[in-house]
Length: 111
Image (cartoon, rainbow, N blue to C red; front, side):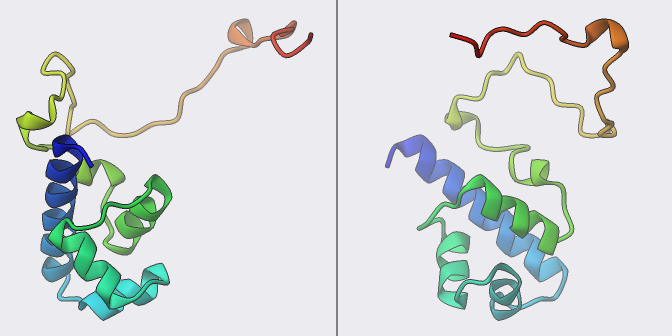
């Protein structure tokens, strides 16, 4: 595992634990929500194990936070591009495509 993965997993674990404690919930409670053992939650919180995006979404839903909660303010040693601006106050709205943007003659899949 790379150093960046370790840093991210540790940051992720701290955020999971912090939010879980804010909600006054146990590791067992979160484990039941995710369908895993409380030992797995311990490993997430200690940064020993990472998780896949789907499970991270389930964790976010259980802890009632946006999935972005886990990605914001990650240590700069993870080599996050500093030129990318994330507006933490922005609302998430659906992308609406207009009729002019509709693809009607897509042949990219044809051989």
